[in-house]
Length: 207
Image (cartoon, rainbow, N blue to C red):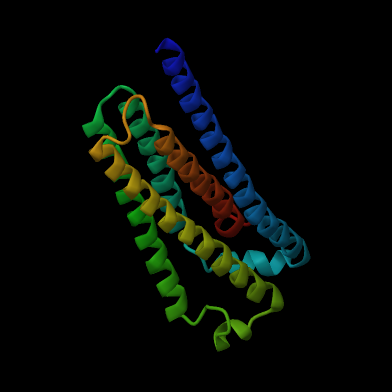
């Protein structure tokens, strides 16, 4: 009986390690994806320095800074949710998970209005207004929409993932002895935040 119990514990432990390793490998592929985009950005930024500086003035730095604060706060809340479940406080863990989703929704709402204002002013890929500008500005906004759009998609995926984790926590499938999936969701969310921390200065703080 003791041998079976030890085997079972060891098996769970190996599964947990495999789950964590799998998540890290997935995050690595995401870093490669965005890393390639950052490389493309760097090349064009070097080629069209003045045009990128002019184009960046069209963006609202205050909105970008607000979104940065929102995402940094959401990183804190997802960490607090993991700490809470490790202490077997299911209610507090769910509260912080929901808080993370609310903050993410706030980020998406801000991004929606920011995009909407730009589109209203005719600044979007293929528009006559944008095509009337220099090549550097056209490329800047092309990269802006692609990179921030892809990031927003990752935010949406992250929200759905955390929503599932919150459901698992409520049902007890995530608890003080089994919270690897919540940790994995937290790692994904931290990646989303880190990517934005790079996007914010690249697009909003060009000098």
